Image 1 (cartoon, rainbow, N blue to C red):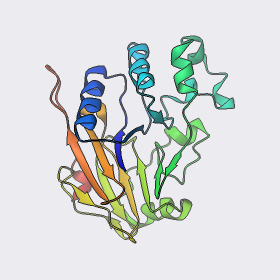
Image 2 (tube, rainbow, N blue to C red):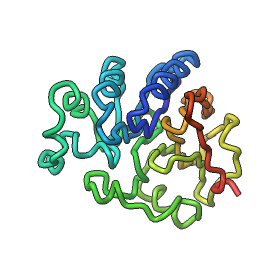
Image 3 (cartoon, helix red, strand yellow):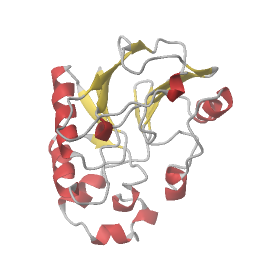
Image 4 (cartoon, rainbow, N blue to C red):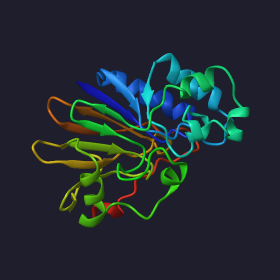
Length: 220
């Protein structure tokens, strides 16, 4: 199965539409959102409508949590700003998804995905074996996909793999991997083929007046 991966949209509608078109062009069988659809709410109705029409399943991010159906999110003041289709769409979001041997969550699996503070907590990228081990010990799936960090990163238990974040990379079994997917709002999406184990980053066309960025410090 070819899984299309999008994350950290932050209501950037043109980039989202480009990402979906590119994933269609690459033959994605299913598209998943790894969280943070929301930014300030200015373009949320349009963003949610696009995702809902495509029936794109997702996991909640720190920006989305107040609109999802988790009991502790029901008291969020954000829910009062949006009714109907927006809340209906976010009601479908889960803390994590599991598909074949893959795990999808907005932040690393060792964090409490049902606690908004756990979703917001950030102590730096998982760029050491000790940091990576937390996720490997918390999750039994072979490949763990996250977003949140607005960059590319692939790590094994022994640490970060040296990778340019542009070329396809093979996540071949029996090795286990932690993968951070770069943000749609920065001009990126990806395809992961569960049969060939190849992760293919896709760089989107630039929107006039905006510049896509790629953090590379994690690859050094």
